[in-house]
Length: 360
Ligand code: NAD
View 1: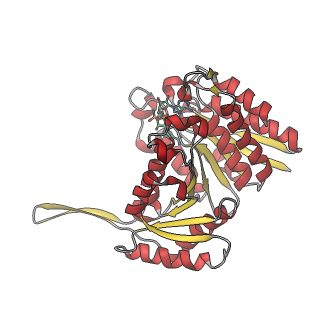
View 2: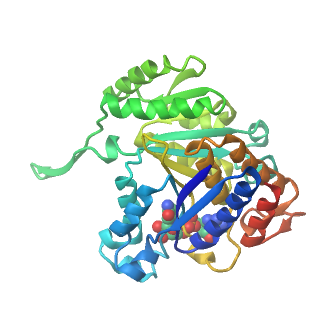
View 3: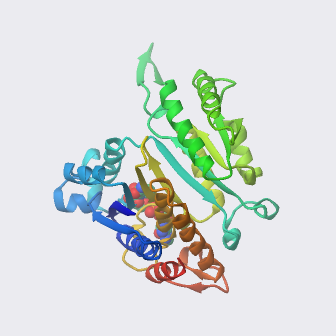
């Protein structure tokens, strides 16, 4: 198969971790007989330095013409970098927002998986973490409270602010379909999270999710109120497979779920539209404090590349090969500095990439 991938190395550790993800993808290509065509584009600070803007129209066109986009990370030190003296629409992050909009990415996927070997980093009690967990948070990304009408007015000398939470049934249906599709590739369970005891938007959410569920008889569906879900994530995370939820609830729950894994350098993410296209990137930022030192953990980016193979190209076997290579390397005791523990062998970013590529 020929895979056309736009790569965005970006800023900080971005170029280092993307180089290692490419190394691992190349190993997959060699083993399974695929061809990877990479085209790099500039985004964030790297684009500002060359073009004066965080993303050019040409770069957007290149990304649109690819099958998928693999990104490192963008941005610099927000207190010292000259990029943050620019107007907000010219700063590095504006490039990412513009790209998400141009590509119509409405579904955000964030896995939270506890690796047995890294269980010590999990802040939960041992009796809870012992059961392990492997969940996927599917968050709606372009609707709800963050995109509704908002205003601040003064009435009789008192300031009053209003935000509105609106979803139409089509917005709910398309993300629900994505959630059930992803569940079909996993343990076939969807937990739809809402606040249907209070909010109309949640009652519509629940109704549409139930309609979509009828097309997926193999997937079991449960509904959970968001406040209960926040508790269950720390009480019994093993119960979850796919958590399907709206924008603000997903924003909060996905951060909570990543915290319980305890390892930021291990967390991948994906943003999808209604085709097979996706933007894949680690959950962490550009870590300017460790850039250029060959000490960054490339695993979150490598796992993002695995998600790309699974969700944009339906190459499940190849994605499994990457996921298993990560497990194997951890089992053999290799660690980058951020996940280092006693008795393990510390390696740099490049060496971690080599080890992973060899084990594919
Ligand atoms: P960060 O995630 O970059 O770093 C937080 C801490 O985690 C730092 O100590 C860093 O060294 C460490 N860290 C992060 N990734 C690591 C890795 N792969 N291996 C080892 N250690 C790692 O968050 P921050 O410092 O708040 O942000 C830095 C910059 O990144 C800012 O400009 C921010 O806007 C940007 N950012 C970009 C994205 C993105 O591109 N999607 C996301 C978040 C933050």
